[in-house]
Length: 196
Image (cartoon, rainbow, N blue to C red; front, side, top):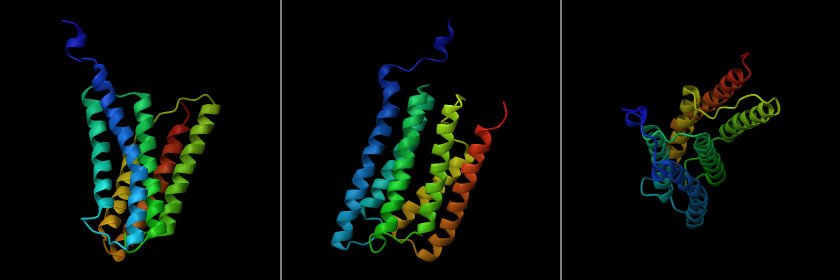
């Protein structure tokens, strides 16, 4: 019996389904912005009936599902990892900008410094990636546990803001997410430039 029987390669459909889910998540980003602005003009309030809440839920579920399917079917790839990272960052940053700009009553207001911290993290990571490419050093798009924690905290805040959770609760949570984001950026840079 050959090894392919125990570790089957994904067929074409299986190979593309995770990437398709990631692409659909990217498409939800502009939808989130349009819906949020429409609700702001209408003076609609945050809450579990808000479509912005459910858009974030669907986006988060697709993130979990595409990763699970890619691992289960052995369909992981550098392209898929890159698309996943782009979709995650696009959703995070766009949702944060929208929430900070619009605030109440559509969302619970999140602090501007949280947005700055997330922007600095992503700017540092992008600058590090460009530098590594120039130095012709290998670049990995794999998530580390600290990156997952930071991402989860930020998306949790986005979800809570769409629900209208009180600012008194979200403010300390925002401080925690900002600190986790900056510490995560430092950890990624330290790993990237660690001597071989």
